[in-house]
Amino acid sequence: MVRVRVPATTANLGPGYDVLGLALKLYNTVEMEKSDRLSIEIEGEGADSLPKDESNIVYQAAQLALQELRVTNYELRVKLVNNIPLARGLGSSAAARIGAIFAVNKLMGDKLSQDEILKIAARLEGHPDNVVSALVGGLTVAALTGNKVKFLRFSKVRDDLKIVVAIPDFKVSTIEARKVLPKNFSLIDVVTTSSSILFTTAILTGEGSPELLDESMQDRIHQPYRKKLIPAMDKVFNAARKAGAQGVALSGSGSTIAAFSIGNSEEKNEKIGQAMVNAFHQAGHKSCYKTLEVEREGAVCL
Image (cartoon, rainbow, N blue to C red; front, side):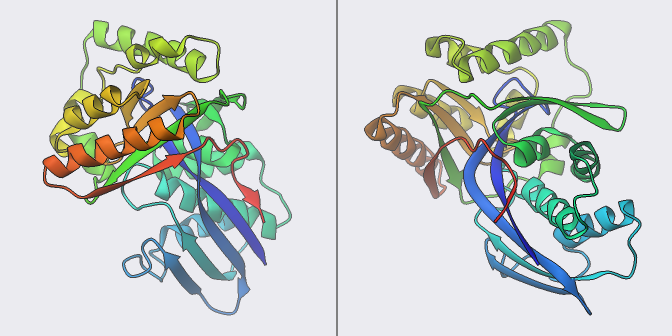
């Protein structure tokens, strides 16, 4: 039997659409062992709504990993303890899939390489940003090259960085969030956004000035079009900035909004979180906030 812990992730970070990812200290765990029949138990997020049969994405990812290893007739007992909110842009599906593949690989004696794990997970997710940071931790820059995942990992993210996430009471489907994006972008939008990725990465790793973070996190590729799915998104962004956040971004495709706070001030972080909650409330939605640290390890066996 193996037990795996996988972190939440926030992706895109403004300009890094499908490229930038950051692992956070909020976790799901996957407990897995061989069984004579399929059994899935779920605690926490999704305990009453997620399927407990072959349609469960943890089971599906595990079976794909077993197929890759050419293992057949292998049933599983799975226990999931979920702390990552579902469909809120914090990488719940990436954590589920990485947890499943990582656990299967441990059961089979670590026969899959890191590249092979990421290849399976990215195929299921459709993009590499969340799965890379969930697996390896830290700040990551990832890309799909053919059917392979190429990435850089920055473990030395600045120590004084906290991510204050405001999690509203409504979900956003990644599929729907992709549908609202245009099929074509102007050259200036692409160039401006691409250059911002470098500056955002530099600042988050401590190589750049925190004062430039908000400017570097401006995006023209996905956030302007996804505002229609996130009530009062601009107001929440502005509330976080006024409360002291150095940068603000839609977490993944939403609905969570992530504020980046540099300076290790608990008072400031509480102020940022409450300001975002109040802005959502004014738009007619309940929300809560969490202040999270960067997870530098990624997926691990417990």
